[in-house]
Image 1 (cartoon, rainbow, N blue to C red):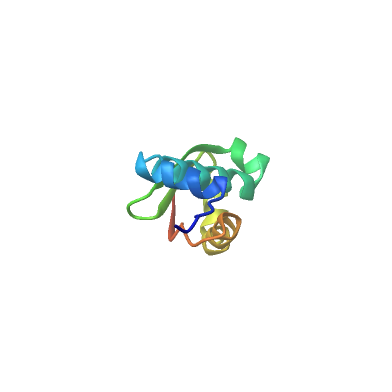
Image 2 (image 1 turned 120 degrees about the horizontal axis):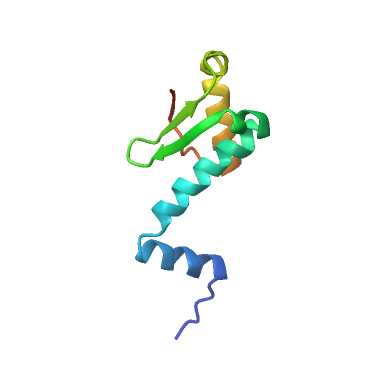
Length: 97
């Protein structure tokens, strides 16, 4: 009978999928990747960050209209940086409010 070797990561990933925690973790990872990518100053001007797993859309509410205008031109770069940090293409769209 062959022995199967599993890493702790494999076992944890399987347990998370089995109990549907992987979706919550993905949402938190995307939201944290946004905060890590934009830096502390923009985080201070961010009111809310919500990731919709079904549509792969990151929704960001900002307190500064000028910042919203500036980030509008950089959404593709921001999305690419977040996906690079996550090491997979998770975010497909960013909507600024």
